[in-house]
Image (cartoon, rainbow over all chains, first blue to last red; front, top):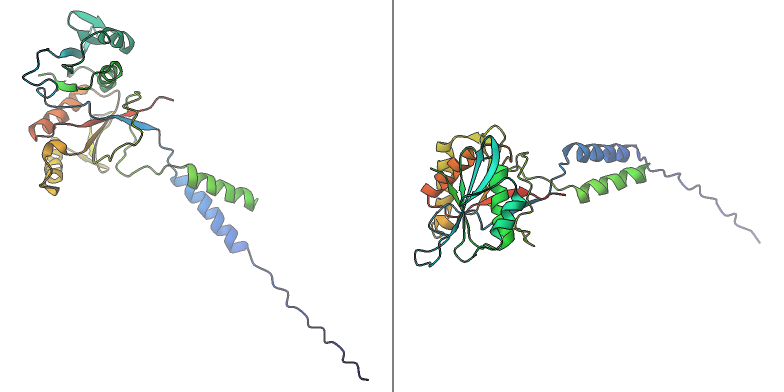
Length: 139
Length: 123
């Protein structure tokens, strides 16, 4: 009986060249490192900023809207509510809290104020529950 | 090392929020805003940087050009009243409010009744 010798096939030594993939991977990493902008979380004072002075309280409203002046007095930021002067947002918020909300709030912005102060006044109005907060540029 | 590199790539891909081109780097007022669960569409974004320059779509524009841009935005949808135009004002917190006032007056003259002021949520 003839024994057939099994031919031992040599399996080809297959190797995957990873060099190019590593290059691509590093390029991708570099791309993301360079182009990534870590955006700071933003929000909006959305419906509160209005430009028309007549929109907060309609002409038929029985109440007068509250008016907050945003300006600089003696070189320092100030919020003026009637005869009262407030130097920070917390005290303005406390003063606005007991006022009637139905007629809305006018934020009267003087040119010498800073945008940060304007946003603080709008936020204070929003925080205490004024649904209509109107931005009015000073003449 | 490849594993680490891949993990880094995945980290950057998932955590990085790609800033829109319209968003110029600006120090916004530090307020928490309306805290809406789902922020609505930004619409036309008007940036005012610390120097008082008005920037729309990464381009510095004057008030006259801004007026034309807003007019063309209004014309885009003739069925939508100008008062309902979506606008986002991104103004630097340190800039004089006179620049914001001038933009607001312009918007008012064009019939845009509502705008939104962008804020940066304090950490």
